[in-house]
Length: 388
Ligand code: KIV
Ligand code: ZN
Image (cartoon, rainbow, N blue to C red; front, side, top):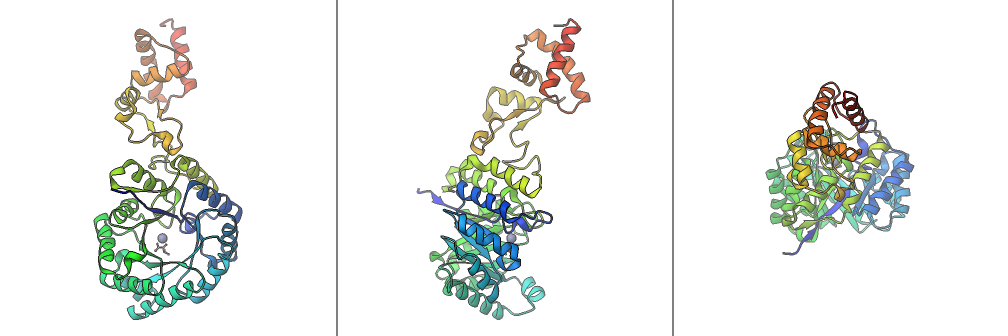
């Protein structure tokens, strides 16, 4: 069976940058956009040009430097937004306008204070107006996750007729279950006329911790674009994490889906975004967290030292981490201590290891983590006590 490509649409610079306190200036955005392009991202959502002069400038400058990826600008279904986005994208080799409107009852009644028919009319106008500027137009049905499938299918069909090339089905509030989101994509594939001519895109938020699972369910059911951010940053609990999607497809080849991302750049990319935004990555974050390849309990350490595959499902080198780490704590066993002692220059016999291990446990009960310098100190104490 042929493997099919899933396009990676990175929205770190748009949805990701909406995080409170994580503002980036144009220079920082250019550095990130350039790295995303080098890493193999297919589409870079560079910003929301009408939102501020700074964002307009960023989208313009990013459009000038990006060599391979499509550069995308977000708009509401509003004429002026689209005019401004088109102007900001003027220098892009491959420009895309991403326009759309809320389609759930909640959005139609409480936010837009209008009717379903008006939403369809505005969607049609927005897509055709964007199409007058660029060939590549992506339409988003905001809050599609909570939109009933019949109405969503009608909106999607009208967007296709008006010229959309990509249909984005956002779970804006991170509400869906993976089965539900996957079934929604399947329903659209089976019930929307012309759907075979467009790409379906997943844009999932993480309010219930299911953004990545939902995006994967979407892809398994036929979506061929996933919208995501580095480190999963984004509004509230964030967006689908790019690094997770990339490694899931890589580690599960039977899905027959792949991306063009150079996974070896993931760790470096994570660090760049974290440092530029001043937003720390939680240590237990999948793939790029500081503890993602750290082993601290005795049983796990013993297993990993014997064979990495006992407790690691991927090679750290594949995500740009040089090696997994054996962290020494009071939960560590003799195997881990011997391994780390050897790394700092001590080859301990079985008897010596028993002696040092007793002293090590005394030390580790006081100090949370035993570092290389501590190992030297522990061994020297044992020597002074003439136990070695
Ligand atoms: O979450 C969302 O619905 C969005 C759209 C604007 C695409 O970010
Ligand atoms: Zn979003």
